[in-house]
Length: 127
Image (cartoon, rainbow, N blue to C red):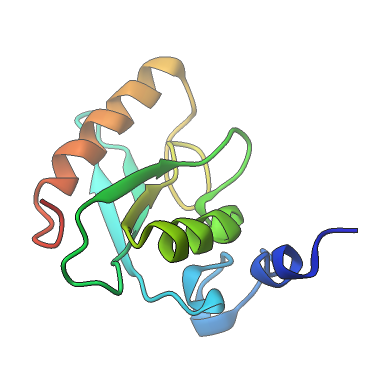
């Protein structure tokens, strides 16, 4: 049986809270913004930015989820990064996962990473 705290941080992935098809940070009390990033080969990536509660946060963590999941499966990790480190978090679904388009591949993974890093440079809350 999972620890009660962990269990409360991992809501049903099929939730419709706030009309979102994935479990999302709002369900654990974290505000977030949704982003869509287009890669050089025209794949659309789905991403979330979870800003730190501390407006002077020193850093943003780029969190890349494990294989065979989506960004909605990592709420417990977002909670601990946010609470323990006080950082902002940027996370995305690789091509073919979650709400991102495309088909997974090693080459595509590297294209996705390049596109996300370039996109993050455009977000004013990220230095």
